[in-house]
Image 1: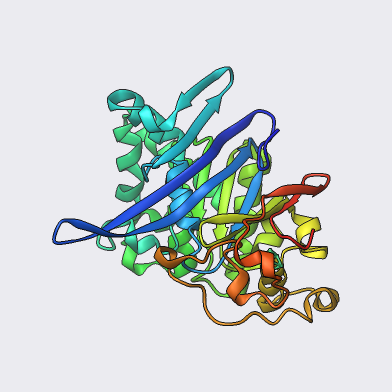
Image 2: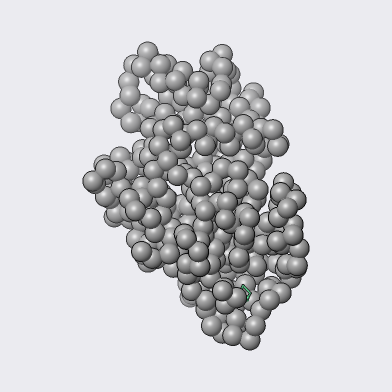
Length: 330
Ligand code: SF4
């Protein structure tokens, strides 16, 4: 199987590229390779952490996984039982049905909720849009998901702007769960929360995967967060997946110098891991994706770069069971 593939995924991104063409006076002046040939599968009940700095392409890949971003090439397939659907080609009614199965939770719930609406109204709109009618049915569905996300029913009559940050994020999770999704992209869903609230939301997300069998692509720039919640971790740099493997293996034995640097930068890092990463001193900032370097894209920042790193692209290849890395050191 190609790197990044698993048996019977709920979502399969295969060799996906997303290119944006920048134009000046209607003429193309540069091409941004936001995602370049990424293969990543997520199983039912599995949480895959997608980690990288801002500008690495992880949000674009997440949006492509649920059809919110058209891909330039490659395939995105959603599978439910024996039925598989090409996410890119779904239209009209098929697309609306697909949207119910594929959901997203954003970093800032205010970006997707009108702060001047009452919480109950925010929750009933998606249910009604998918054919759930009747006050009693809606109330019963809302109370069920409120129990799961740990919210009291008395906030249903509150306005969104009256909620705390943690309550708002729980409401946005509840809204997604009301539609019984099979797959959720959580895009930096805890990055605006303080440490204790972060832990609570991570527990809720983990239980959604474990108890409801939902596949989750958990996008974060914090390796420590990915380690807590994920079964597998994928590390992305400038549009490429550079390392992928079981969460424990990535955290205890990171292979790619970029992964080692991310672990080193992680505030909640296990002290024992500092030994693994002490020598990695990454230079500079991530370049813009329109000016990506030749060869290994990490080579201008890599302390271990060799002559061939600047002109030969290392493939993502398996070096241990289920642990893949693209680096000439291995
Ligand atoms: Fe560093 Fe070379 Fe490995 Fe890239 S391929 S991460 S430049 S050692």
